[in-house]
Structures are given as C-alpha cells and as structure tokens.
Amino acid sequence: MKVVAILMGGYDGEREISMQRGNFVFQHIDTTVYKPVKAYILPEGWYVEIDDEKIEIDRSDFSFLMDGHSKKIELCYNTIHGTPGEDGYLQAYFDLLGVSYTGCDAYVSALTFNKSDCNLILKGHGQLVPNAITLKKENRGKYTYDAFAEELGPTFMVKACRSGSSLGVSKVNEAKDFVGALDSAFAVDNLAVAESFIKGTEVSVGAFRDLDGLTNIMEPTEIVTHNDFFDFEAKYKGASEEITPARIAAEERALVQQKTKEIYDLLNISGIARIDFIIRDGLPHFIEVNTTPGLSPQSIFPQQARHAGLDLSINNRRKKT
Image 1: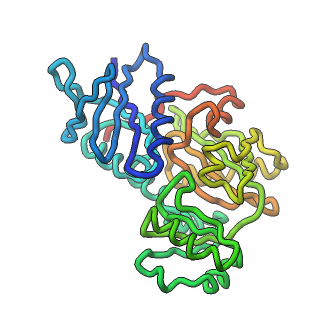
Image 2 (image 1 turned 180 degrees about the vertical axis):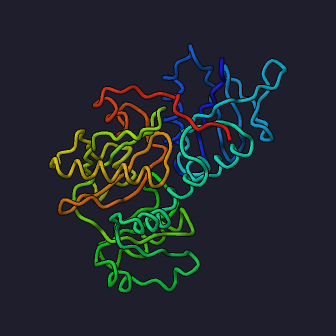
C-alpha cells in the first residue's frame, strides 16, 4: 500500500489553519488505497506521527524509520498554507529528491504566492488587475499617504506581498491608517504591495485539472463580508457569508469562469486552486490565486464541489521528474 504523507504545519502565522486542513484530509483519505501518515513541517523539526509516536524525518531523502527499517514516502499531499509549502520551497526540495506531491510545481507556487509578480504577469497578458505599487521595507521611511493616494486614489489596500489568509492586509481609508498598514504588512514580509481599492461584488472560483488534462471550472461563490474587507477574521471566524452559486448575472458568471480558466492555464497551475475576483461594472478584476485552498466542509472549494456533485480525490498529483 502506497504511503501518503499529509504535510501540515508551516513556518508562519497560517500554521493552525494548515493543521486543521491536514487533519481533515487525513480523516477523509481512502485507506483501502493509501496508508496516510501525518507529516509535520515545523521550525522546531520535521516528523511523522504514527499511533501517537513522533518519528523524525530524514531530510536527506524524506524517509523515516519504522520497525527498524527506512520507509520512503512515495507521495506528499500538501496542506501547508504559507511558507514553505505554498511558496515553492518544499516543491523545489521534493523535485530534487524525486518525490511526488500534489499541487503546483516550485516555480508556479512561488509566482502565485508573490502578489506583485503575479499581478504583473497577468496584466501583461491582458487581465484586469488593480493598479499597484510595490514597496520595500528598507524604503518605508520614504513612503507617504499623499503620494500613494495620488496614484491609487484616497482609499487603497496595503498587503504583505508573500502571505496568505489575509495576514498583513489592511484597508487604508485615510492618512491616519497608512502607518499602521505598513506596520502590518512589513511584520509579515519585507515586500508589500499597495493596490487601488475596487468596490464591487467579490467572488471566488475554484478550478482543477483532471487526470485527462482538462481544466474544470467550478460555479462562482459570492463572498459577503461583515468586516471592511475579506480579512482573516471574516475568513476563519465566521464574519462572512459564502453564497454558492453567486448572485450575479449570467453574463458575469460566464465571463468570470472564462477568466478563471485563462488564468489557471496561463499560469500553468496544477491540482485544485481558487481564483478570487471583484466584479465591477460587469467586469472581473483579478485579486489573487490560492493554490492550497481550504478543504473543510465549510470551505469555499468543497462548497463548489458539492454544488457540482463532485468528490474530491487525492489522485490528481504531480509526477516525479
């Protein structure tokens, strides 16, 4: 029986979210086909957990000792949000070792996790994206609200460039919000991006490539937040509503699904992903890609899968190179 490591944990503020997702996947894998083991990737150590015993992972070949024998992990199901599982580091490591894993390769993971670079690529291919300015922590003393407001408008977003779950994201409504927004973003990453605020209907669209190589696009979900924007609290503490299917016009639905497919294929995304947009005046504006979306029953992608009558499967994975 093939050993599947459910990767969970991570090195940043998204660790607890990853733990929840990993435990959900562990509980729902078909154990008649796979032998799942929990694999924790943490700053304090890498280890698998079997029958409540923690066994250190040998990082030279990603194996562990079981009954006195070295057991090689044959497939990794990645549920790590943030670094090092969503930003390409683990994927590059597995590529070097020849270990199979779910989701995107190292380059695509790094690109989609970097908000500034991803927006520039998509803008160059004709996608609608917010006007944006990239900021460096080392230059923060040079940044002023007035300069950004002149280019982006009086209300704009400041985001940590390489983070997920809306960590390090703030909405700047006026000058007094600006310094705090920089503090929040630079506490997470030494790069940040300021984006024009787009007022409209926020939707998220799931996508995946099946075993025949076809890109499948899900029904859009409308996100209604009770906060100022779809922040960490709205995402994980019930301060939002997710409505599937989204309450949008048929033309808007068709267009946002078309844009989702274009972006998924253009960026060469693998496995399941969510792509977020804000629809303004009938046009979808790209916000971000999530290549490790939540998989609990309440998460957006499973909601869309249930609506489509689909079962999530572990079988769609990257092959060893």
